Image (cartoon, rainbow, N blue to C red; front, side, top):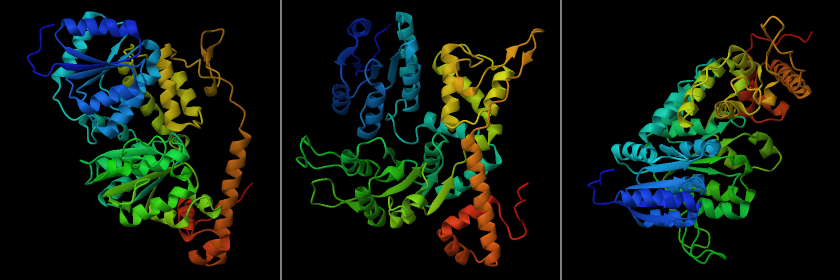
Length: 469
């Protein structure tokens, strides 16, 4: 490879496998690059915070996802990040792509492979890595949103577009895997804050004793191990958006502090005496029923109403099965390209099995099934037992449809409970001549909850639910 005329030829190579690092470093040195090698996550991030690199090669023998995740918060100048992965690293490579990595090289690689990926990476215009509003990330976001074509998701998109125009808190509700983080990112990217940072915090993933420091930062010496000042997620999100995922798992001790931040935009770091003021829009998501959590005393009522200025309900995938073929085709194209596998046509019987499946894990479950299908070369999804048996040919060679699976008792109970709840609401509304304030008191729920349930059940004064057979 011809020596690049750029003055800055400093390159960071991060990984833990000695032989692989030695081979890679030998090639890069022969091409005239100056190398710094990091063999731990902390060492890698420390170098990225202090130096500007032409490009970075990140081997997934290191925890690449953790590097990318923390790099988004701390910032740095890694140049294009090239992720080196083996064929067995499919899941981790997909996670790295979701976190912003754009260039991949599959091990073992040849000299020509490395040369080609470097040419591609260095040919693109340079820009700050991991910033909100990244063109490719935004294009992928809107590409995914374009798949939301069912009537229920069209309603979600209308609310989403309205919510993006006003700078208020939004509560995004829905089951795990429905795409709540996609909704949050879309709101940010369509808002006036799109040029600012988008910082995500999973309130369930961080231990309670560390979450306060994670959110609000700490001063040096605030506790054992606090050797230097740490900027929290709220400060990192200043003039942008912070997305608090799984807000229902936020510990009660932190709920009060979050409420004060929402009220006046001020807080103190752990161990600090001064007040920090930030300009942050808060988006929150939960897969729990927060009203029930409020009634049980697990979640502050005043915080709930502060968060729930606008509510977006993301329906589960089983309520929008018409999107399954579109999503499946999208994931097949995306991950065939990412994993460098030949695109596999999906047999009609596989698609029918997907459409019949209940998808308790929602879109994330479908996405993982397609990843598995591509990585294992399994177009019939025979290795996905949760889908039920695959169709098989009969004696004449025709495809037999699998026998229908048994009905889930849990589903039967859920449907019966929903029917009973709707009938109770309608009876109470008729008893009060549709005075919804009185009806809410009789039903012992909040007025807001009653309005949501009326809308969800499709109840009107002229329409009564059909009687049970």
